[in-house]
Length: 492
Image: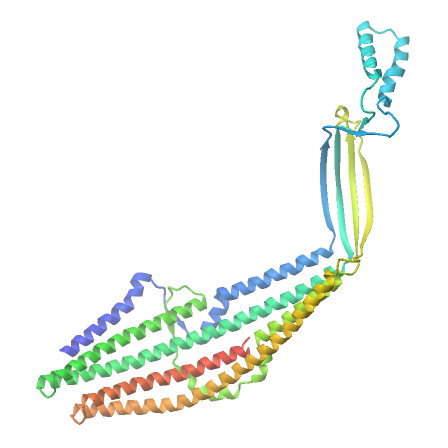
């Protein structure tokens, strides 16, 4: 009866854990995932890969932007100026305030002669005489005359283009190196994501296999509790022994819940790396033992000479190229540069009386020129800047050598971990078989009263430990192999 209650509680807890995501999260249809499928989805939907691709696109546009500096720059302009206060002009030793412009001379000298021969109304003659008197009145002032007109209009097109520009040419070559760097960063991102997804997948298998070991142990504990309960009812065992069996069953159920929680958390991590909806339910295929048959062949196929393809080393090499190109750009800045300019304008200067009339005059003006710039001396700035760049190049070389030694150390460490993991797998696999056999024998002996409950408990504990250690040793091998593949850039 007690055993039935245990089974009923276990079924209820399991059912609630299975139904809770459906009620709370309204999960979608279950997605069955293998390792190749998980990697395929991650490489197409992961935000990390999308960001890397966008960065490549951005640098490509940046390269085209720099190449555009080789083409002519053309601009159109329209300008208007209003003379609020006209400019004054002086000639030293000469009073210009008494000068009469042609229009005034015409009014004061020519028209009076015409009027003297023509009879005109008195009112018109009087007005004309007043104007002439005002114009011919002696000017008083500072000996200057105002120049310019009320309105100035200016419109035109200007263009410029570099003909010889060493700095620009060197900068465009830098764009190619920058594009190479972002491509290498994208490769590093893919390599890292590949490693993370692979290890997350192995982590789920470890959690699932550990859960299966604990579940099997729980089922054995449940069967043992049933036997002990029957013996307790028959009076062949003490109540203390039954209580211990009862506690062990409850502990086993708690361990199962914890193991199931670990499986769910591992799946959430994998879904995040894959870039899929976190509410999508996934089912991960496979077991850790499925990889055991290919372990030795995989180890034999490891080629440590591919360390030169390591992304970190490649990035250091590209950084060296960038510094060398920076040095070339700096050296090119001391070379002469030649550019061509062209300017075509239409201009008009008019007073208010003839603005936007047929009498307003427009005149064109155009120029075509060459501009040569030759740096001569800048206080030693260029010289010391060049020395700084050369020091950076030497620093980067030492850093690369140090990185290479560190990567070689990691390769040796991973290879050592792989070899030790293979030995542990052999030992633990045999130990798991022996522990399972010992548990079966211990259960039979306890049922016939040939052993104590303590011996049975020890057998169950040994079985759990052996199963967990075997799974852990396989996971350690797969994890070390994945890290080594990433270090050697085996996939990307």
